[in-house]
Image (cartoon, rainbow, N blue to C red; front, side, top):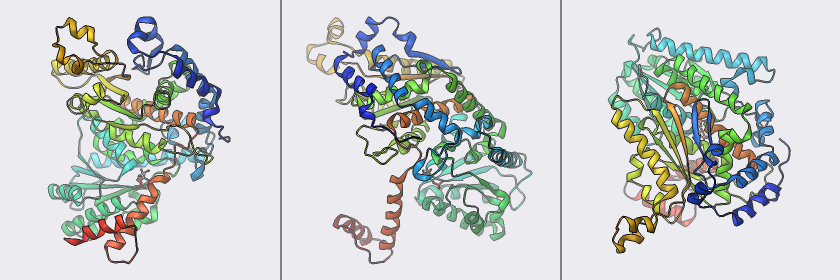
Length: 534
Ligand code: F6P
């Protein structure tokens, strides 16, 4: 990737700045004045509907936003990514998660292609053998539980997908995810499961992550105490780049599945990091998810800018953050099976784009990522939607709906969808004084009940929660985040900000354990208070 030019001096950026001052953006008026609005702000790709019409933009703004993507060479940077340029400059790495699902996108790299194929074959075969009982526990019993031990990108994607699939598929094994360095999590699992039928998947690209190692060690102690030392190799597998470290842990070589440094943790769900999905639901389901993601990627590649949903999503978010000055984004999936989606998206988006320097190290003068948060609808309506509707901050919302959400009770499905559709309309159009008076609202309450509306949202309608569709949803958001990174000129693929906290935790722990390092007065006070009563 060439040296990035200053974003704020891009012609289209300057134009957008002017438009943000001159255009009157009122959603009610925008719909009244522009009858065709829904035609150019509604798109369908690969069977998924995207309604961008309730965004705070008009045609002029959209045109300038798309011009900005041209000026920032978004699509050619994306081609560079696919073609294996080292666009992750600060880590000197290529970015290859797309190749995992589409080998044909690999630029003449026979070796890498063969490597991906053989890894995928081996971890999917392993999953099959667990499922059919050819691979079993130390005492000869079939595995019935799979416990994924990992954190961040080594758990959020697989956990989100295992949960999402439960809408349509039966899991053959019970699945569990342990991530936090809180003994409560691992203790809860080991106190409730039978060691003879439990398989641990230790997922850690680096195999140095403290949380993962602490939980993995605890699991190893448990297996060793219950079944003996020799049982460890039967009950543990690993997904990692660090083969030596896995071997030291006691995992046998044929049970270590590689993942490469060119697949970022938060983009790794469709690599061997997703093995828990394949074990739980079957390799064919895993392949369907990959197929869905690949199909979406390919359609995005040929989709014109003005109907490319990831590009539209990207530019609308750039507009929201920087010209409308909205600093947060609510993500509300209207399906309990997607309740883990906001956490997954939080890491994907905020770890990727939460940066304050551009790819060349110059400080960026714009907002690069929103505060992403969310919770399933309708639960969220009864907790924080009050603020979305009447709070002093405007918080744009992504509604994710599912047309055929599984469940036999039709009335429930209609209720769920009606709520989602209704919320986006209320956010956009609210209820004004005139309407309240017409309803004979008491005068004292008019000010309190008035809903100003003019709060933007995007609605995504998935046909159903089949494996392929989940793959497409993943590809949609991954690409939007990457496109935004290219517009901003930042490196979406490193995460240096997380490192210092990790290092400092070790220093603090050493101090708690008695060394004599010195900290600031606040840190010292917290440590001494902690040490007081334990
Ligand atoms: O949170 C920082 C991070 O480095 C993430 O990017 C990554 O997904 C996670 O830690 C886990 O890392 P590992 O897979 O090496 O254990």
